[in-house]
Length: 218
Image 1 (tube, one colour):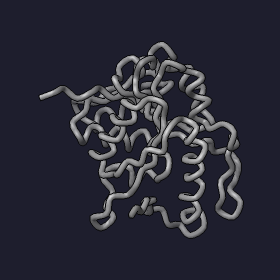
Image 2 (cartoon, helix red, strand yellow):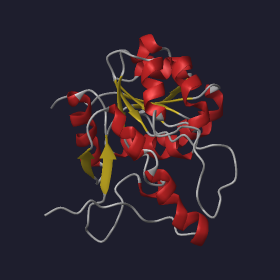
Image 3 (tube, one colour):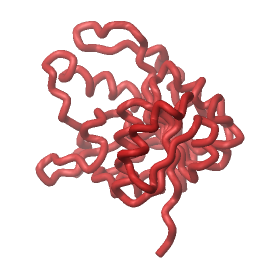
Image 4 (cartoon, one colour):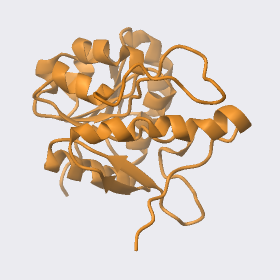
């Protein structure tokens, strides 16, 4: 049986924990990275034998696949901390969104990007040899791993410049209970990232957080 890729998850928050646990659930070896690795010791003790912790740089070196799961305001510094050389040639699944640290207006978040450049495009410039793919950015952490929508698979919109990297991301999404919808090259992140705004409105207005998008076709 082919060995599974090792996964490096950069991010000590709830999204990083959710995705790390999801990969562990499906048999992957996982390292979670934080600026201060010691803060993840409790998670490591609970997560089992295939779980490790390290710095951003150590996690980027460890992972055959790297998941970026930090606040959008910290994403560029996290990529710098991981080291472009450690991400070169690797699939980097980008789950970040460019959310500003300001209160929402009537349930609508504010972004620090505009429609001329997405956050993922900014990150790609920081690590030009990495194979960035946008994914997991348009749903909350509660539904990221094998969500239950009454037998219906929700849609996860992805994009990126490397076809093989998108195909691998689609395989992971299938394992995690999703249908991957490939929206094309990296510029499509300009449209995918704002789906976070739309997804959050029912939660911020009505405390409803257990929904997902579905692309219907005929």
